[in-house]
Image (cartoon, rainbow, N blue to C red; front, side, top):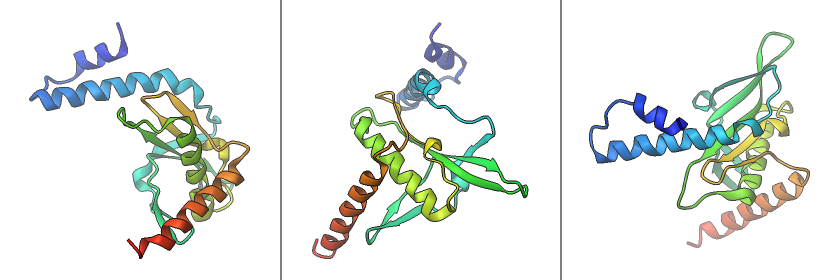
Length: 166
């Protein structure tokens, strides 16, 4: 039996059609996530926590403030017993406008740079993931991350330059 069918059987009865649609979409997302889960290669010493505890929700880039709310944070225990943020995960669930491969490449790169700027040098490119659930894309900042950061910064500068004129 498919994961979606098992999840929906275990779910409480939908209160109305809208609630039923939400349950079905959630089950779809979980099933699609399980299809890509093996592409997420985390070191064994990395712990995962909800991103809602992250205090640095915004990234200053090119004269703009970019909302960067990670869905999950990845930690490693430091030698002194504290925890260092080494990575993050950002999910996209839009079926109508999937982020796709190029978008995930840029998103994972921006997420990594945000962590470097706000959490220090311990952010690991291999631990920063953008996951587009509908298209099944999992991305980390690749070798061209410097060019992508330059492109993001240039776009932010252009937005900052034009924002007051809108």
